[in-house]
Image 1 (cartoon, one colour):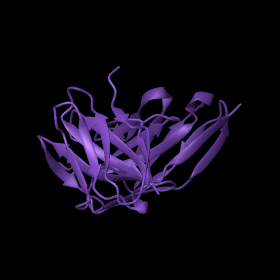
Image 2 (spheres, chains in turn purple, brown; image 1 turned 90 degrees about the horizontal axis):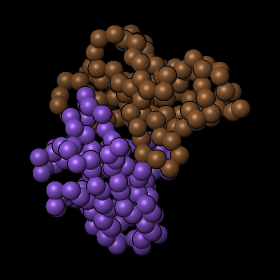
Image 3 (cartoon, chains in turn red, green; image 1 turned 45 degrees about the horizontal axis):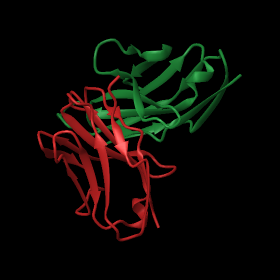
Length: 115
Length: 115
């Protein structure tokens, strides 16, 4: 069964360092997303990506964040200068249809710990 | 803007007992409704969704949910649970009126099924 894969599963970094989280969405999907979950809090939307551009982003997704689909298979989330409050589980997801009607397929998550 | 409230953070039940996980939402526009499940060390997986039509929606693994517009609720039920249903369950909504891609999640309910 096709699945969304994420790497790394866990990354520990120092505050101020750049981090890249990688995702391989399901191959025929058209929409790609990043969500995050800070420990003990809700799963929060960060950004959606369609047709090689950001289609929607949340208030959390500021200039420190960027996304890229560099080669038609990977979908990356970059945090330029990490802060302590960026520590969270980051989930990548993909879907064939837009999220408000379709089914999102989530990866297992990348746990980011910022020290 | 939308918000989702899951009234119970933890629900312990015995195997073969019925269960109801409660979800209420608030929105200034009409919404689509979803339940996702997260098994340990896995990504979120769609259980069921309400887009239109019958307010009683059946999903995978014997779960069902009922959309109640007047009470702005979308409670999840299963008549007889198994040990394997132990997981975290997330209720989510999306905006029906735009082609947006954002899902708004509740806090999650940890269902623990005991033998």
